[in-house]
Image (tube, rainbow, N blue to C red):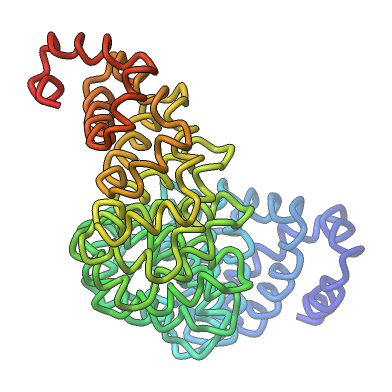
Length: 453
């Protein structure tokens, strides 16, 4: 026993680790884990826990049969032995090879059981081991099959930041599984996650936001997430200095905005301005989901005026000039959507949308052509806009689009020219710019809508 205590004491020094292994100290230590003397067991597991931090020692401990013995000690009635055993197992579980051996020896249910331990330190180490194992694709299903989800969720309410963080990291890994998301909701996991979005701990906050992001991507859990009050804290996180949480927040709002059930509520809870402020963000991981969210929200009739009244047009029009085609598309879609309201037609032109929209008419991208032509079609209903659109040079590219192979583009261009032609001066210019021949050609179009325009 005295020899073990000496080894335990010197094992905390890194330079002694390999020396202990070279002198053959590991196999007898492993064998002593099964000693009937509890004090000897405790000293042996203490020494092995310290030595296992070294990777070469870790391999030797596993090869010498340390895993089965440690699994037995997880059931030890002595809390001190149990604590040292789960601490050692946590260290070993960082290796994928060791994870498989731990599971083979029946260790997973034992570790999950320790998540419910009354000892907070035991909980922390058990949660850390599950966190390591949850990163394995092969073990995620086993954790769920072993009823690991409920005690992991329970630890999200722990007063220990260490236990909370490990539990959340486990849930984050598991939340990429659709079945796990449904069970997470069933077991009451959503309310504590929403509450933790306001945590002062950046890692806890980011992990909670990441899990919420995955929940928001599932039709089976998105409504429950909204009902639990996720919108307000996610909107606040858009302006957070916590970059990971900010990215998750933008993606969560993007996901939720795709559902018609949430579009109005999101705007009522104040998401427009914070999303608009993300549009100039240099990080595409934040800018892109914010743009998509606004695009989705602008499709709802009740949101169109709000986007304009809250100062959204300058931000959105800036996207039309982006070097990124997807950003141009999102911006053009928002402009087209809000332009269907009469009161927005003048504002769109006043805020400088015409030049970039006309540039997009010349884009080689057919989707951008269609959206730009659709926006110009809508704003060309206004009498004053008819003059300005022609003055800005929109007629030649609109005429060119009449020869597009895409019926939708032809239709948008034809309607825009029809609206412009109501003004006698514009009518003359359309003819002078060569619009007559392609318009006559459209009379032979197989598309009835195009013919009528």
